[in-house]
Length: 184
Image 1: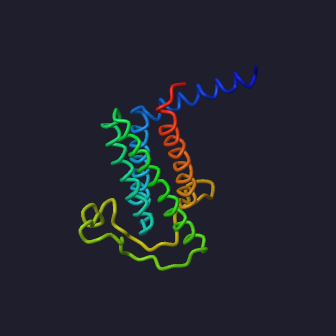
Image 2: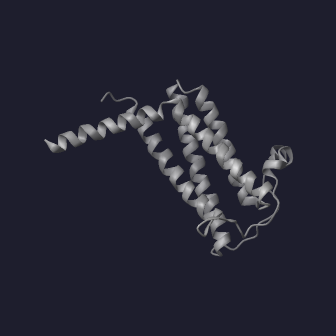
Image 3: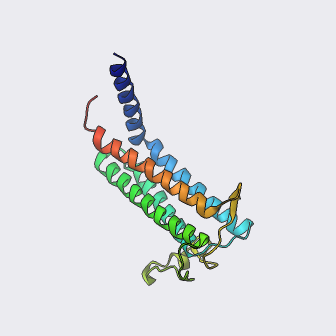
């Protein structure tokens, strides 16, 4: 009898999570998260004078894409197919953020050796660093990120953040895809 109650309870929790995955609050949360991260980056750049490297700028670009995707999600939330595609896209961006964070952390810690250029690597027809230099201009080479708190560097913090975001988006995407058609 206890197992049956636990299963019913678990299904109830999953339905609550499904409601969150289908609500506008998910998109609002992603927009606020993205704006918060971009604001922190700008605070470190312009107030604390911790200049961004190419990997930091790449991270900012991917966060900006999450903001754009979440904005679309906010307005297209009622369409299940569009919502699912947007969730998958945010999940893919989160996975890319893990890779960028890994590269940044590896360069900082010395387990990845490589040239870190002052070029964004973007094609000339998509020059974000020229169009929006106050946000996307590369100011320094890779190798160092500032300490955020308790001896934890920004690279370490971004790695943890990227993993948590990826796990959360994978779970929400799974819930959206698997449970939205089932009647529990």
